[in-house]
Image 1 (cartoon, rainbow, N blue to C red):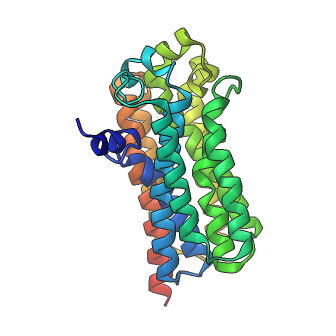
Image 2 (image 1 turned 90 degrees about the vertical axis):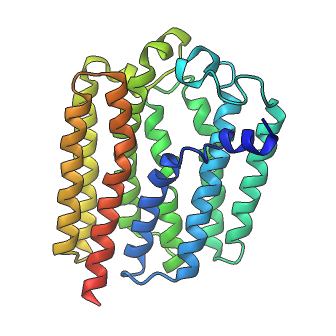
Image 3 (image 1 turned 30 degrees about the vertical axis):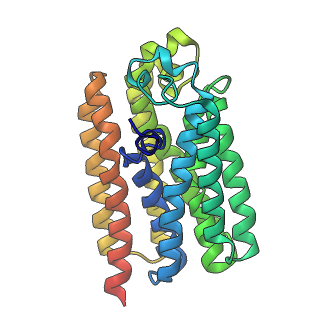
Length: 285
C-alpha cells in the first residue's frame, strides 16, 4: 500500500464522522456569533481548520496509543499499530497538518491566534489523559469544542459567556457520544488498564449518557433562547431530542454494534442543531 493511502488511514479521512462531530458545533458558533451572517471566508477557514486539526489529532492519538491499540480488536490494523508506518511519520504528519491549520488563521485577530495555541495544547495532550483521568471524554469535549470560542473570537474579537456555555454543552455532548464509543471497547480497555467514561460509569453508563445528552441540549436551548431564536431552532432541538431517544433504544442493551451505531448517529444530532440555528437566522433576514 502506498504511503499516501496509509497516511489517509492514519488521520481517518476515510472515516469522516470525527470531522463532522467537530464541525457542527463550530458552524453553530459561527452563525450565533455573527447573527446568522458569517463571512464566507471564515466559514471556509474554520471548515478546513476543523479537518486539519482533527486529522492532526488522530495522528497524535495513534502515536500516543501505539502500544495500547494492538490489544484492542477494533484498532489492531491501524497503520501505526500494525507497523505499516513508523512512529516518527505520525509525528511528522501531525506537525505538517497543525502548521497548515495555523497558516489558515494567521491573518485573523490576536485573540483567535492565542486561543488556537490553547486548542493545539489540548488536542495534543488529550491522548495522555486516558492514563490517569477517569473521564477523558470530558477533556475530549474541550478539544473537540475549542472551535466554539475561536469562532466567537474571530467574529467579535471577544468570547462572551454564551460561547463558554456552548463549550460546556459540547463537553456534555462528547461525554455522551464518546461514552457510547467507549462502550464498544470496554472489555479491551479494562484489560489494558486505560481510563474511559464507560468504565467509570459502570452499570450507570446508559443513565449517564442520557443525563449528558439532556444537559447538552438544555444548555444549547438556553443559549439559543437568549439569542432570540424561535420556531426553526425549536424544530431543530426537537429533532436532536428525537435522536437522543433513538440512541437510548440503541444502547440500552449495551450491544457493541448498536453502541457504535449510536455513536455514529450523533452526526445527525449535531446537524439538526446547526440546521435549526441556521434556518432560524435565514428566515429572520
